[in-house]
Figure 1 (spheres, rainbow, N blue to C red):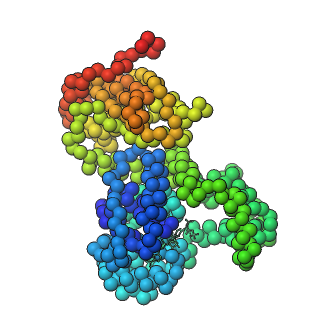
Figure 2: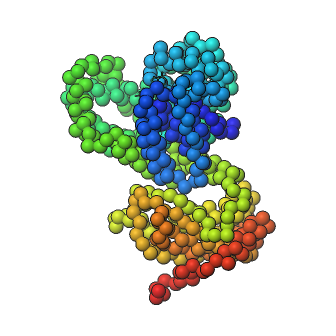
Figure 3: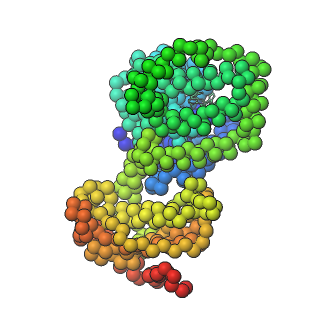
Length: 491
Ligand SMILES: NC(=O)C1=CN([C@@H]2O[C@H](COP(=O)(O)OP(=O)(O)OC[C@H]3O[C@@H](n4cnc5c(N)ncnc54)[C@H](O)[C@@H]3O)[C@@H](O)[C@H]2O)C=CC1
Ligand SMILES: C[N+](C)(C)CC(=O)CC(=O)[O-]
């Protein structure tokens, strides 16, 4: 399935706005309806947070951002759209009324409800065309967390789920198809069990909201982000594994350790206690600042998992590969290569900095390596070329550090070809601050190799031709300061 380019979103609260952010960041135009007159302001703030997060999340070429159209009615928002996201409050009467409004204007689009736990069969009950309704339950923040639980109802038509899953994959998500309908699906069953138990612990004055959160984030929360429950417990069974783990700890479940079936009464006193403790814990931050802290942490976790090729990090890597391939397909076939070529644009990530409070030296090489890869893709050394057995290896690098740069600052790399003939490719990267001043340079010698023999070889004719053309253009430019310098050479 190619990515849909036009989607309607109904409801722009926490979840609807999160969907809009994921969609526009992936190049999809959104037609949005929400009766709240504050929607443009709130959405603008959430889109700014999402843009900040994506700028740190990936160096892959992001598609041109989709546009948002604020529609005046549901009918206007959904008319002619092939896919509709419903994200209105969790009330059956309201959701059914919205579906009736949608059906009056559009009888063919897939309708994906964001409900946290209502059965799709119940949502379909009064619909004239129920076959196109599914549940697609996301997680907050929708623009960063990949999971979306997909549930069909009794009357969902065959094929609707598979097509929706393909669409969500294209948005960089992990669709989890839940084959049997069950209230609250999988994730909210688990979350509600933990939440219910948490409410008891506060109610019984065992701990505060902050202590409870500490118990999660310093311990098992870290495990859950990368291995979930059962894989973690398999390891906790030691060499004897899962059976031993269940034999040892299973009987505890029958002890009165938990109150899982019971909910404490949410008396005004309990609600106030929780709200006051939460204010003491986090009240120093406005909600948008808290969202940004959460997002920066999530980005760092996703990147760490990507480096491990594991869990949600693998989903990110797969999405980046799609973006790189798409960038190669849709990129300008004849970019202006007569000037230094922009090969990297981004911001200094928080985890790129060190104890000196500035970007760590190792990250400069990482940025230059990414810039080199971007240049190689430009001359045709893409995934297919590598698969066919050709590539470049870097054989020598020389870096100069000219100025400091700190976390969050905008940066870019401009690349010059110093030599591009036969097996040899010599590149000169200028790493600049967003304001244009020079931060560092990297000069690199690369050799074309045959990946079968692992020895130097001539590049393919298409690559050689493109490279030769750019090298000739760059030979016309003045030689940049710093080319050919050696370590310790006086300036
Ligand atoms: N907040 C969360 O953590 C999650 C919520 N969900 C689900 O997403 C859905 C939306 O929840 P939230 O975004 O949290 O709620 P919310 O209260 O933040 O936002 C709801 C939005 O719907 C708008 N709205 C109200 N009536 C409307 C109408 N007639 N037409 C169009 N828009 C209307 C409101 O103005 C508001 O902006 C619910 O079904 C909820 O269960 C799913 C995953 C997580
Ligand atoms: C609290 N909640 C039921 C709305 C939570 C969700 O549905 C998912 C999430 O993001 O935690």
